[in-house]
Length: 415
Image 1 (cartoon, rainbow, N blue to C red):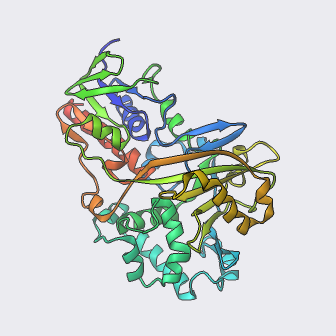
Image 2: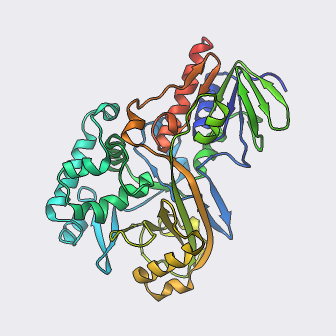
Image 3: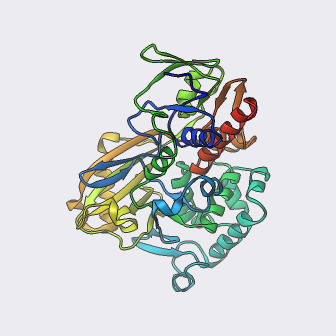
């Protein structure tokens, strides 16, 4: 093949964002992806007519980089209700966004999930997170999220019943050791936009980016064995040369390909999918475990968010278990037992579809990881790296780091 201008190793969101930015600048680029489809950790499988995202994921429409590079309308985004249902004390309680669903919020203001003062503190957190420019958030003093929320005045009950399962499901760690900078960024995104999934699943996001590339620019099932200088050696022995190489793989693979690149600690999640004859919760709600016992952190009926997620007449239930499973072999049984308590004996009729065990789902983001919020993407002349581990652990972080890597390449190439 002809020598490309740039080789991008990895066809996840960062790699695709990098390649599309290079393409728009009229710099030839090829993307080498080891998998059978683009997306990296953002993929959707079709299974018996159901759309199964590889782990429960959502897209926040306020993401600034997403607004730059995605045609959101073309994805036909389907919204979650702004708020949550919380299992606590033997039943589900409703927490609604007081600014977007004021009547519902007022009608549930005395639900036993935190005090009235706690609910007012949520508005204070919103005001804090949305003040100033979004770039300012990454320069604010930081601490672990647990301490940050306590210092804001939230009660232990509110943290344990709502904030821990809510943010724990985002950060994929329930101890809330994630940086308060990340918490404020995420809460700002929730507050300023909508929480959605594309109608046809999260995998539609990388598919849209891939369609922006020229024919033949994305090479699937190509595994890279070594990267050095401007050269890439494939697992089959083929050697490729380019003016620049961008490593856009998952963090662990990047560390194995790049000498001296440390691998970040990764947070894990296990996602179980069930087919149900009827939805256990009506409406596009996120359901949280407000009691802290049992394996389940959060539940969503994905077919209530987007009917395309399930065949007609069936419901698709997504269940997330955050962190290590103490007994992976018996996890399904323990999840069923817990959800039977929540939703009744109808759970016995649910059919297990698939379980995704994702040990490397998301880079951990303690305060030490965000001391430098925008980590370097230029390693040497002609060698670059991007991914959510170079920015912040979010879809927006992955897209941003891909664009930053492309800009560094273009600068070095004099374009």
